[in-house]
Length: 273
DNA sequence: CGGTGGACCTGCTGGC
DNA sequence: TGCCAGCAGGTCCACC
Image (cartoon, rainbow, N blue to C red):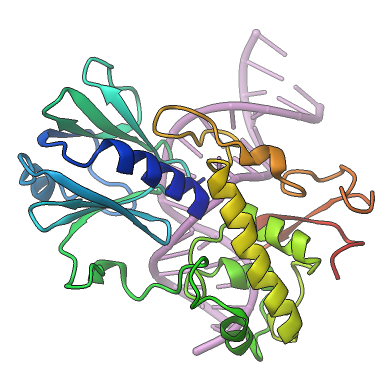
């Protein structure tokens, strides 16, 4: 479900609402998501204050004044909402962080591909449990020379490559298709065959697409929504994703759907070479 | 090491 | 109406 813009949208909302809140209780309703929930450790954070909200890759980081950080990954179907403590929990509401002011941060995740961890960051805020994370796509570190040098001699399709979180973080299935369309690069193109010029274009386009999506509050297709339940507006700006059989907005040719790395991939066979 | 395919889950949709 | 295959925005692991 959530790629970088969706996680950033959630982070921005939480940043406005959570800092200063005190944890009054923690309720868990399942044993494990992708990994077991750190139930005991979470209970120990009762009385901790929320200090700050960060995002790294597709991880949401909630810093506590205990010196620990709550890490949340939304997987495919995870959502976070800030609700009143009177709102009854429903099926798949796996975690409630209840605050002293009567509000509740509620995590729901039907497919349970998400992740909830509690960790102690290092001096510079980095989190060892997350391992070595690739550069942020919106950082200066992610540039044409970086992509070009990493890509030499690689035979995997470029779409798989930009979705590989070990190369650059945050780009998922929707924004990969959208970025390649705007760059006029075919998603099946072997990564190592990209020219430096194409790398320059692709890097700039990824930054552009992600930035626009953040501004729009992310993309809502099925169940993504903001912390207040609102929908992301970027779905109206999708040019190829989910558009198989429709005319290409550039040239009118029929948008095709193929499978790459097990994921649906949309592109215009005429525009993208 | 690089690349591919399946596994992990539940829910919704579309076709029969 | 009902059933079932297929598919969903992400990782992770085994295998070649």
